[in-house]
Image 1 (tube, one colour):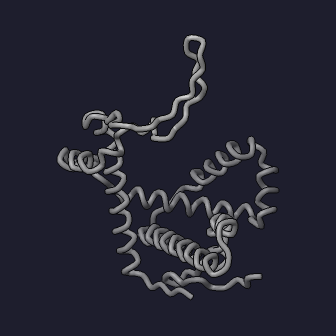
Image 2 (cartoon, one colour; image 1 turned 90 degrees about the vertical axis):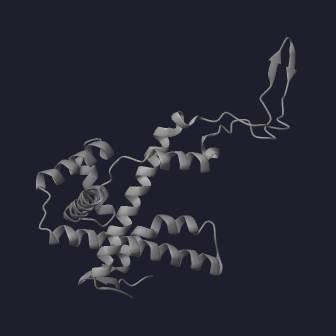
Image 3 (cartoon, one colour; image 1 turned 60 degrees about the vertical axis):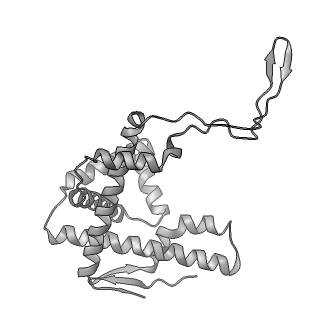
Length: 222
């Protein structure tokens, strides 16, 4: 049994051990089927550390939202709640409430969590802006260094075919060797490369923004 307590303090806001465990629980369940002993403990600690980091970053983003005096209108949150009930519970509000109760959540607590998720999403979009334009040189350089990503790999060596009926005879084919493969041209691969590089740039901008929030914050972990 784990007694709840303080996992971290972020500018005066508390993150509890139970919040960390709730976030890491699905991954922990998977780890317990893969590892035992010291290796399991090592993997569990890494998972919990990562969960705590995510919660700290989330709290920093929410604090930045409040500092800017932004607001999310109540009807946006209510609309989101209606979507959740419709999509996940067939529109049955009573089933939704009973599910929350089974998970020891009140409707107010769930609504608050959803509002916080909306805040985090809105702030990330607001602070992570890219030009959505990648220079042709960068695209060409990526294509040159990662040609394997754009080469088909459907006939691996050693693969055995299904039974093939040909002219009344039955054959089973095995790939003994493979040469080349179909490679997309630069023009064919360009949209995928551009999308990938834009996503990478957005991730880097986001990391720098979060890092700047961490630098200005008082964070203590326990």
